[in-house]
Image (tube, rainbow, N blue to C red; front, side, top):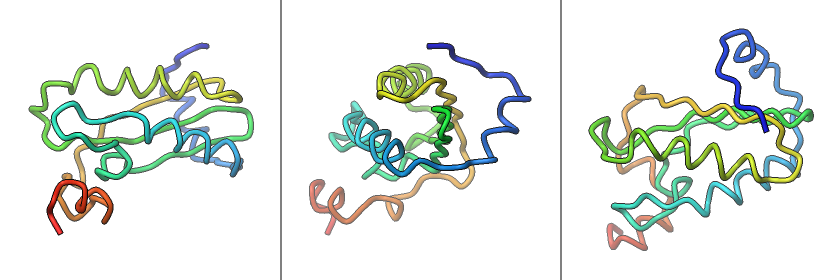
Length: 119
């Protein structure tokens, strides 16, 4: 598995030709990653902003954290990258941290709000 963070490849990621089965498998993997401070997976917390999956197995993920000062800001993206790279059919994983728009509780799924007693 090669991890590439070069700008020319990022331009190719937006030319998404999609693979619904691979996309589902990537999201299944993402749902196994939990925020260490809030015991809810990253997808339901609303921390995954965008996932592009190409048929050739290239996956580009834009994610955020609840705050830029989060103690796992340097490790969680790598954990996401490593986990998604284990999905059969994935060849390259690019994970970018984004801070705009800022994360808010409104990005959480209803099930996450229920789990945390916020509903």
